[in-house]
Image: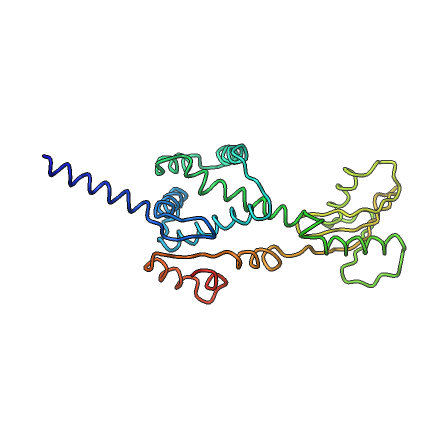
Length: 265
């Protein structure tokens, strides 16, 4: 009886040690075997039966997003995580998936840490990059201001990014600018100069109101690209060290001749 108990204890200890095995390090964060196993469980719950190397690449990008968010000063609070978790629960069309996630994981906090928090991080990084006109988009925003100055001075404009809409235009851009004007400018204004923006573009415009509607002329000024002008450059500074040789071999096969091949060591 005693021998059986000892064997069982050793078996449990081995399983525990295996889960605590450090398989990689991303920047200063250690990645454990359990992290990989839990990501695989989450993927299974969402309908993807992934292999270990595929799960690691998913996990790696999630951890990198959290690290990048921290590097650019984004603070993700417990309240943020709870709010996002509630949003996912309320908006999902398959609530049974979340039930399965919670069922497969030992601890609900694992889902919040490995899945919910990285979602918030990626969205926050993109929002900061695209809408920070004083930092990430400063150069493009200054160009938009120059274009607005051209409009105010009524200079002759020969630019492929120039547009001129007349009242009644049905283009998506016209409708967007018209709605933004109505939200941001007093209704009695007959003319206005303003820089509007969406996620990818600045629109320095002159808007003239007449009896027929709005005449709008201005420019498209594309914002910097998230991946080419930020993400790849920042990720290249992050060290991804793989300690599990078997896993490393399979992952390097997956990322052969891609950007990630130079990141993983």
